[in-house]
Image 1: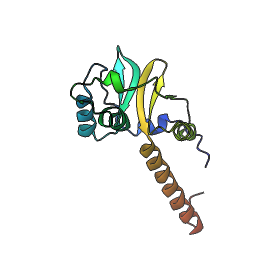
Image 2 (image 1 turned 90 degrees about the horizontal axis):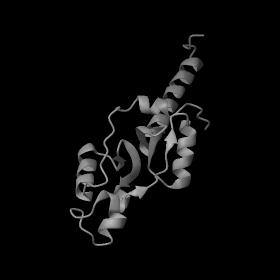
Image 3 (image 1 turned 90 degrees about the vertical axis):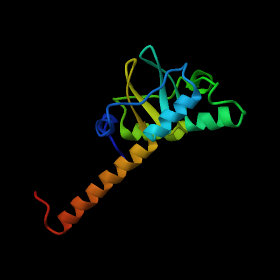
Length: 149
C-alpha cells in the first residue's frame, strides 16, 4: 500500500506532550514513567537534545537478564544510543519501512536537532486501519449511489 502522506499527519493526531527521561535518571524511574504513561519507550533528552531511547526491551535485556538493579542503574548505562529517527518530511510508508527494517517499535520524529514527537508501530497500524475503514465506507456509499460527485 502506497502511503505518501507525511508522518506529521499521525503526529497531529497525538498529544503534543511527549514523555521523556534524563540520562542520569534511574532505570526504575524510567520504567515508572513508562508504566504511568502506558508507553513502551522513552526518548532520553539531555540539554534539549535527543541522545538516546530507553525501551522495555532495553530494560529486560540489559537489566533483568544481567541481574542489575533498576534502582541503581542509570538510564545512560542501558539506553540505545544514536536511536533510529525520522523527520517530519518522511512519509508514513517510509517510517513503517524504517521501523520494520531496523526492528524498532518506537520512532522519534525530529526537525533539525529538536525532537517533535514519537510514533509507535501501534500508532501507524491504528492510523492505517482508520484510513482503510474510511475508504471502505466511501466505496460502499459510491456503490449504493450515495456518493456526492
